Length: 423
Image 1 (cartoon, rainbow, N blue to C red):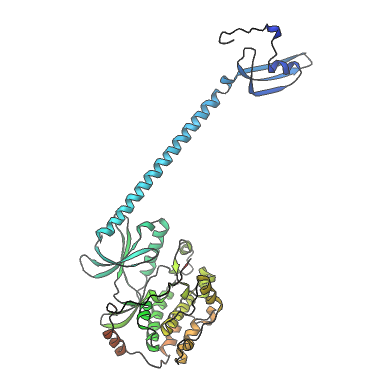
Image 2 (image 1 turned 180 degrees about the horizontal axis):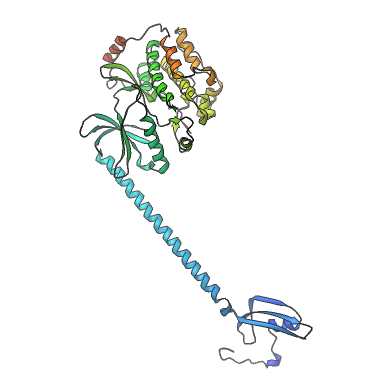
């Protein structure tokens, strides 16, 4: 009717609307779904029959008019939501592009082989957190080892861990601990630190190429490791990753068999609550061959005596050419570390060893920390009075270095990969 149409049925014969029929029947109701009024227009309505007066009260509003504010609000909501989604997508794309550009810039630094005052010569190592290059200072021309945080791993947590490693290592100045020279960040965002360059041989490579070491030399090496650890433990730092690959034998300053302890990336600050999240976060690869029992079962409860266990494990490896425990899987090795007693080194070699040396190594490998030497000074003192069957003198060391050049040595035989564990 609102559009000019006229009904073909007389008014008195037309059916009642929903509102009229319900009201006459004495119903009280509200209809917000919509129905057609006598004009045929969709409306919503409410009505109430008043029996005491014999008539009803009703009201009707066209659906288009009643719901217009809702339609406007709904349109505004979806418009804003769509706009926010588009903005979020644009921000995400922009951040991806920016991150990729930063990554390209960091890779360009490595390709250019120039990092501030340091010129990178060649890559000499790579670990879970970064890459190590042999480098030299542009002004002093001094050979240096530069460790860079891998561009792909430059996250907030990785940077915090990297800076923590530098901060803790820089507190150490023992002659048997690798020295730290510099720390910085290139304009392209590459984090790095420079340390002394060691042109020596790691203990794992030494044993692989030349076999087990004589008792006297093992005592000499372990005493130097204890000296490095005594300083670290004295200021509340635990290395937690003492192993043959992290100990290097060198010739430096006219001296031979100079021991250097490396890689303090897993150092833990004792009783430092703020370090706990950094220690536990992320993934760090460590070999279970040199983990103490408590380092496997209660990683956050290790103390200095855990480092002494690993010193004993390193000594066992140097004496026998084999780790304390071996196995076909990480789980098997870890179970042996926790529950099995080590075979005495003399039985592995089937030759006699000085009883004091063997007893001290086995004491370090005790399952309970209380049964081990209680600090690095005690262990170093005990080593100093051990009577080796063949003492290792400076002349012996000089003769060995004269006859041996690791760069001319034959390539090491292929070995079964050592299982690694992530903590």
